[in-house]
Length: 485
Ligand code: SF4
Picture 1 (tube, protein in one colour):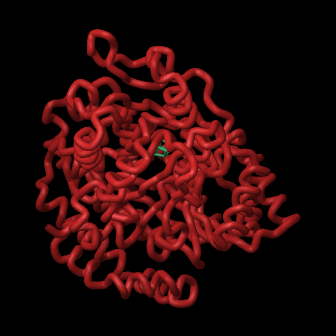
Picture 2 (spheres, helix red, strand yellow):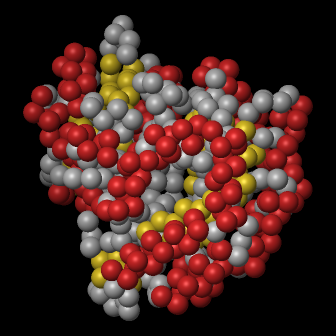
Picture 3 (cartoon, rainbow, N blue to C red):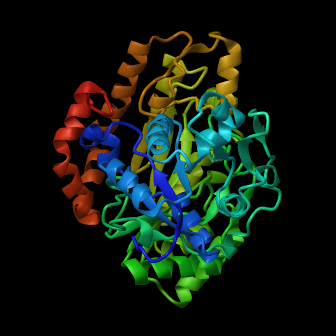
């Protein structure tokens, strides 16, 4: 951290739980993603001479003292915490300490949870002065430059003259993503080495996550889109190409995981990007996520030649009725055809699934298993359905008042690794059993096992990490607990 400029704001990514348990967290063992939103905000603010630093407690769990020392040394007038739902209370814990150290510091919260909860955060949490609703770059810039008139700053919740929480309204003009500088990756201590993509999800190191679009125009029941709402914006092919080249030249990145919800939504952009790579090869590979509707063979072949290594597809469930209840275009046959095309193009496929949605039954789980195991997917992730406060299904479950199932509304445990909602007609115990069975059956299939063996040469670093954390993974299988007490 440089000490020459007057620091205006410290940007913090909380860990989400006690630092002493960080080394037992199986989710951290498998994946540590850079806080891309904070890195983008940081670079944007610097353009306006708003100097700042980032402390990422998820990558560096023992960072509490670092935060407090920073506050004592630089006395920034603002501190901002970017939280998910499960890390929100850890952010609140840090905010209390900040208040104690310097009661004058303005404490800001941003991220998906506060965007979903809006004014409610200020009603229940005195430690928080302002929340940013939606994306942060322009809102924070405006707030930091014009903090005396919060009502003039669109996109925030603040306390009005009467002390009551107010929402200043959604920001109307959204930024053109090509106007943003590349995120300030250099402000993430240890970047890129301390950040790790999911095991078996990359062919080479160093690697990183990256974002080239924001938002999604679809409206799946389980998806919390409180930050970008229904908008969809994207970087041009030229920006995307330059961003990749920058990551390669500056940090030596060899593989990128695009964290976009819909990488291929704009076909023309992807086509142009692949043409740019063809003209001037980058020598890099990448993964992306897409909806099956937005893939075709010609595009896939072009993507493969531009370095596409793996595509993740949201399958969610193989039960057509359950799928139709929760998302648009629930066409499982189309999904199968697209998966076959991806494989034909020579790209790996990862299926993203979910168990425990409202309406889930033993029968739907059986159908889902049957469908998924009939697909030639290379990898899969089965999440435990979690009703996040900003998702449509959260409201539905709350309003149904037990008619859809039992729900434990525990924010700190909302990490898709525990069943907080138990659908009607099935017990929690049975749901857990079926979950473990699903995974077990997946790993018992010879084709799948062989696929992991081939990772020995396709992704040797994954095997190094897997074996290095074997004890932790086995404890997880035994206890079914993400973090040990
Ligand atoms: S789950 Fe995916 S496709 Fe559905 S709304 Fe969310 S981002 Fe869009």
